[in-house]
Image (cartoon, rainbow, N blue to C red; front, top):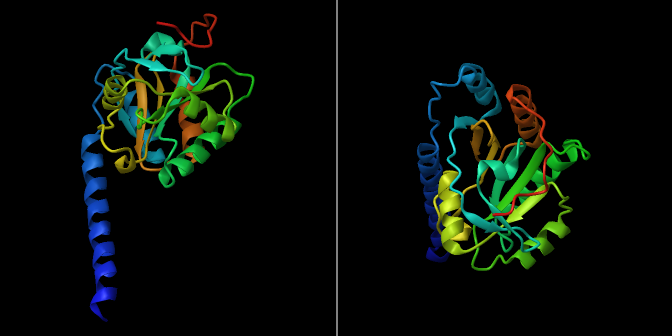
Length: 226
């Protein structure tokens, strides 16, 4: 093998080692937090293991983000009312994992009841410098996002705080790892996947949180304004 062919091979091996190291770091960052005050913690932990997810806690930071129509929303529990939310992290110029994640989210959208208003999909941009509300709107329309699928962007500092709250360290958009969360913000119950869960896994998690969440049944709004 001549030097010109050895160099790409070495680069591929080095890239594979870096990828394995990065995945290990992500798994350490996203270790679950025990929930001693949750009477259903053991059941949810068993379900999560079967689904490949980790139970976790999320402290929503109240950051101000922009919807794809330009309106504002606060990242806080009452903005989601009593809904189950499925959250992923993407950017519109991504050509690798983001299209695959978005395809999973689109499949989840099809699997949930179109007329129901007790669920939301939320895609948060990891590239707020380029992902304006208009760009997010165009991307959302292209993938068939319905009214129950929010697309959020915002000022860089607000987005960075939001990402950290979900356990995703800010950085270069192209370096972000695939991560999906399913949660019930009203009760603080969350499951997190580091990697690419299947639509079936996400739908099962939504069903589980629906069954365990207490729903008083107030009228829900499209989204809360700050």
